[in-house]
Length: 189
Image (cartoon, rainbow, N blue to C red; front, side, top):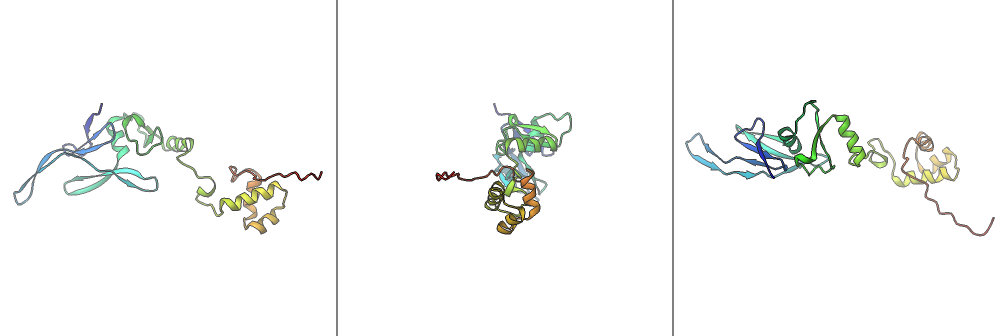
């Protein structure tokens, strides 16, 4: 069942539901020239921001607009935070599911660990911020290591730095890339 509560600092203006919706409250606005406008209640449209497309809404108070992340509004309204944790974690990993039943307070570390565990955060290979190489280059490096080429030969052929080749050989980088080699038996043994 959907429940609505006032949004902190916006009491009498906006409410949030436990299902992750925000609505304005019906009210009368009197302009400086004396005109009165009946402002109807309505569900606010959701916007998306940043690399991770986090849902947010615009809230207005005294002619000032503020953008607030939807999951934080819901968590502050419906989820107790006795340990004063800073982050809000989406339990199922879906950032568009902002129902209170899908949210929990977490530390930054807990939130990051959950992101890696669920696959939401992937900074391996080409997704790593310091990556210089394509998957194809690294696949060729891994294949050449598998076939016993020297690091200098691999570097000259692929353009991959020797330090990276060494880290691949030691299992420290690009560990998700496995040798892809077709073994063909042509009868000569």
